[in-house]
Image (cartoon, rainbow, N blue to C red; front, side):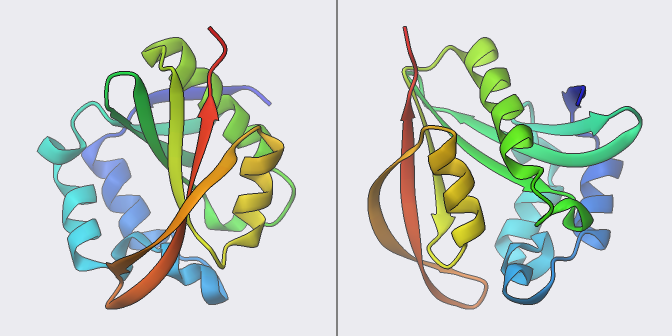
Length: 155
């Protein structure tokens, strides 16, 4: 698959927030599930240069966010709901890893994932991420357990 990255526009952010809704327990990842997350996602100043839309051809298939912390970059991502659960996650994720490594050159990449999200954790482990720790975080009107994971970049 040939993926292209471009800075996320306001229109793209609004489309994702309004139209990308996940099934069942994965609705936890709907951008509008948490008011604070939604406000940040829709604020162009807070998104600035950190959010990228990913297209395959003309189709928007997902997005990545990159929080550059110097030697480390923390990433977030979302895949278009109708593409999830179809075995496309690892390829999509690896393209994002290549992008962050080539554009940020970090020593390590980190991410946090809800511990119930076995599908995503499996993908991250296949891509070479290791579990670091679990922690509790208030989000979506409740308190949830997350797993912090990291990937050591080859230098």
